[in-house]
Length: 223
Image 1 (tube, one colour):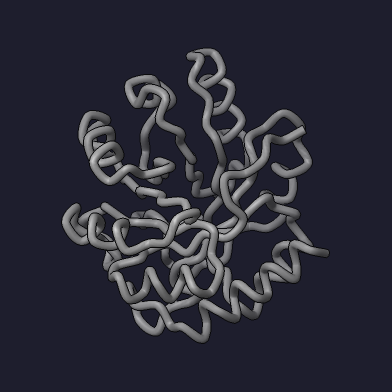
Image 2: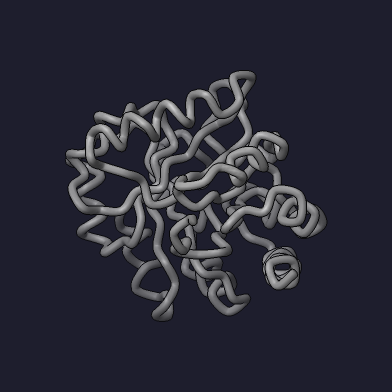
């Protein structure tokens, strides 16, 4: 049996208090704050602090990091009182123990080798005694670390969901209000994660699309 996920619906790439409140009012469970400098959705620690302080209670705050030193991740996690670290770079399992007890969601950009690299990573984490709280499966776009709008391989994600004893699956990669219900029915994830699919432009959320995405997702999860 999988553990319970920390959230069902995460809206990633929040860059302003305004968008954070739109997402919160629409009923999201979690927001993502992107600290990758090359992303159009990158936020500074100062901006992230303003967003976090404006959020109502009960919404999980996830920090997305791409190959950031562990000490810097820990410092920002503690300063912002985040709930979850999202590793979306090339960090190996040995990177996790220095993060201590802080929960981690590991993102995998799944390519031609399917789940082999995912399984090997999780097995090594188990050997090191530092597991991950959730696994996010995203599309593989060379040189990019998410937010591309490219649809992930649903068949690979579905195969992961069929495994027992693995962390809860978060499906990302090109989800939209129009496609998320079919993705949930096909893959059966524990949660979904969206960025570009609910935007009017990179880093700016479209309130109508956010609301439509969350409504479609809630209905699909209810079955």
